[in-house]
Amino acid sequence: MFIGRSEYLLDEKGRVCLPPEFREIIRTRYEDRLVVVPSEIDLEVYPLVEWQRIEEAISQLGLFDPDVRRLSRLYVSRAEDTMLDSAGRILIPFKLRASVGITREVTIIGSGQLCFHIRRRFGAKRSEKDDLSSVLSSLARHAVRAEADAGPSATPLGQRDV
Image (tube, rainbow, N blue to C red; front, side, top):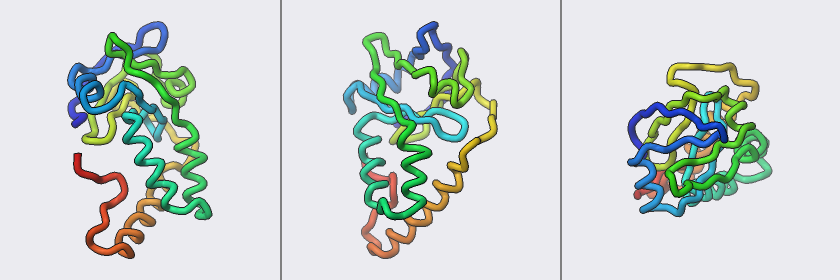
């Protein structure tokens, strides 16, 4: 699981070293390929296989739903591939860093089984241009309705056994 909080500095190329525990998880459970996507105030970093599961879950919601299309436009389309290099660093593309106000000092925050977050020094906030939180809330309601329709054996969106 990705848990804990650590502070790091980006190097001049925009790379950040990941905490040793995160590197170990990525190297032993996943390939070194990661996906970085900006959210409201930080960057979410997913192992590629976990990101593919999220994309699959979103596609199951139905592309004719306007909220699903907005989610694809506001969230999925911003995702970028990156790799864990031999020194345990990942390159964070400039446009993603700029979108959440990351310059040099970052906090890496574990958030459980699926991903971890990278943000400006912990505690910094910024205003959100897109109303991504309302889209995510709306889609969460869709997932709850889909779970109710599927019956008690359904697994909520984003939850699975590891």
